[in-house]
Image (cartoon, rainbow, N blue to C red; front, top):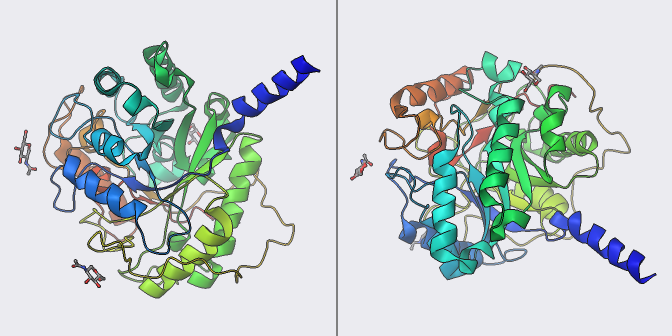
Length: 403
Ligand SMILES: *[C@@H]1O[C@H](CO)[C@@H](O)[C@H](O)[C@H]1NC(C)=O
Ligand SMILES: *[C@@H]1O[C@H](CO)[C@@H](O)[C@H](O)[C@H]1NC(C)=O
Ligand SMILES: *[C@@H]1O[C@H](CO)[C@@H](O)[C@H](O)[C@H]1NC(C)=O
């Protein structure tokens, strides 16, 4: 009895990585003027995030895209120090596209473990190896010139490299995930990546669903269908929503209108109804640092704790349930257009940091070419994006083509 109780508890713990439904935002490592963020910039973000007026919980988690401080080869990103000072939980990210190794990422991480010890490691809630790498190498990503991605075997190698690197450290028990677009997870070729993970991160943007009736009133149903398809594809593994949001300003996209009013509707119908305190969630975004995307996903324009709209959650919702219909994870079809902001291809290296300031990396990649790649992909959507580094925005258009 005792033994079985112990086992049961152990089982709960082992599978319990989503037991806490984190609330956070995404944070790239550059500002809207393409300069690097430093500690003070992250302090300002984290302090505001935790004090947002009428928030449905404490936004005290952050998703990062890299361990590397911009303008450095492998110095730990200064977000770590800001997180320690504000007790902000950290979903770590390793940039995994356009490189044959993640040595600089791992070096920066090990330096942080040595330098900050438990103050740092106690805050780490997860590690994502890669961001939208499989999407960029998918048929759709290639068609849309989304930039350089990584294949499943490369991600598997990086996952193992990471495990070896943190073995024997406090991070060895931190759950490992990967972040990608939903359609990636229903593609059977990628199953071996899912199998290697403790949790699965999905980025979802109903706003960009051209041809799918993507007006704001349908955003809840579009979101749910993709989310359910991912859940069906990954089985019992926890699904974390690593990016989602609706622009508060910017041009209209098919039927989708960017406005503060619609951003508020999306907050209610996707955030309040479906995610907050139910699923680990990293909203896109507290502030928008992408100068090349006309759509601004920010909920504050100036890091004021009083956001552009009232964050209070309603008690009733408009989104109809899917009525038992679940989309088939085995459906085939090619999402039409997508692009992944992660493009930080910038640097095609381990550091999604450099926007026009080629500083990073192991590969000595220059960032300018990568900017072009990413802008090309944006252009495929009729929009000019720039690098991932800035924002990490993942624009997933047409990703609902399956439905
Ligand atoms: C590029 O990096 C250097 C440090 O290596 C920094 O001094 C400079 O301000 C950066 N340039 C831009 C445009 O951010
Ligand atoms: C399925 O995944 C593999 C490996 O990531 C990729 O090469 C392939 O293009 C994907 N299929 C489609 C239809 O995108
Ligand atoms: C920040 O922006 C909000 C909304 O646009 C505005 O009401 C407020 O005055 C601004 N605060 C500061 C300090 O500029």
